[in-house]
Length: 489
Image (cartoon, rainbow, N blue to C red; front, side, top):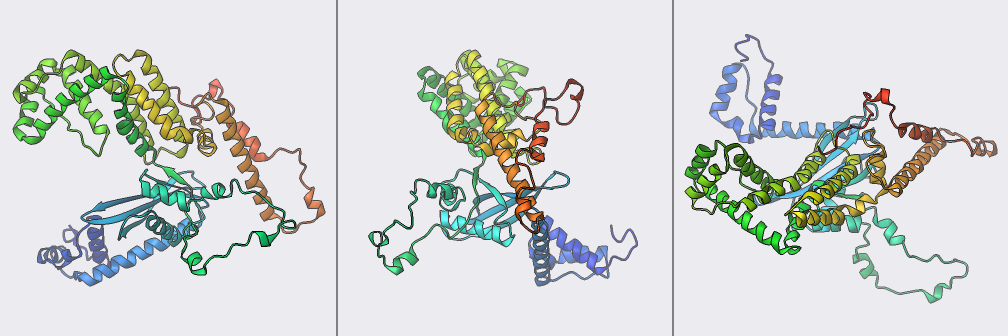
């Protein structure tokens, strides 16, 4: 391509293209030593020289350092950020991945960047994870800017934030009685300890982690698997029907996974392939059952019956087919809620509570019309209350929902939750305005102390009231108008 253009490409451009090829394609450094690669480069540009393997490695390290410096400079201008962290193992090695997210102050657009994909050595203990995460925050100089860090519900992550998280400060201070230092007899309260024991003891201040936010999608995963499985203990009829139905479906899925001939039989008779569930993706079970129902609706029960006869598997009874339909209807809102919350560009923290609230409402409506999946619906409701109940009472999360023009105060009918959210917002607005005034004030005297009347309402509070005013009929086309359609429809 380069040669066809009859242009001389500078060596620097060739080097950059080689580096991009290796980085974007995840190619090994040794690719530059292969004769075929050298031949390709010299054919396209005869005067070009191929970088050596040590040079490639050094150039990539330099580029990574430059990207890190650029990101640190960009984050230095940001007041608040949020991070996510995940730990996994691959090829007998463990890694910690951390990403950073923030809102541009001028455009109000979300920005994201990868901070680290760090190799972890040793056991994944809570203190080791806390140290690695705290070190990454310090490297990018955002330790005091992180408002929350989102992780899954792994026990080590939960314990790390419980021990070193910012929310523990209030818990530690709670219940401590204040004493008057003038009336306190110190000699009655002196305890003697070994100095070496105090130095060896973990004070809990070794690392400083921000408040913890459990991943909502991971919690929904637990609701759809662990909590949904408890439905069998609620009703014996549901238990027998569920186990019999899923046993027959599993037998069909196993047959298609054991032989390519079985897949060809399914394709010939149904013109569609079956979807096999994956243990690590709970919604794959929903998709697999949805595919069976689609085959029955489009090709009739004879198509499934012929497959069962070919595989020598018992045919699904009409009651079992009806159960699969109700199962899909029941789990569909959960799938849509998960898809909304895991959106990378359009979902914000303010979406969390409205989505969960809408999900609970939809399950309540399904409970009145369901015939066989009532235990499943109640198990899902119990799971949502158990895992998201404390979040529904969090004023900060409620405030995030109120501040989104799409929801404002219409996402819940609980007046106490809305009141707590508005109080939280107003308190922070007052703190922000007072801090800005203190920064602008160069001197402080008696006149300035009374310069602002107490009765005067803060400008930010007025703007908040204007934001929460319901939209008029003629402004229904404005971007701030809440959607008239259901959130999960």
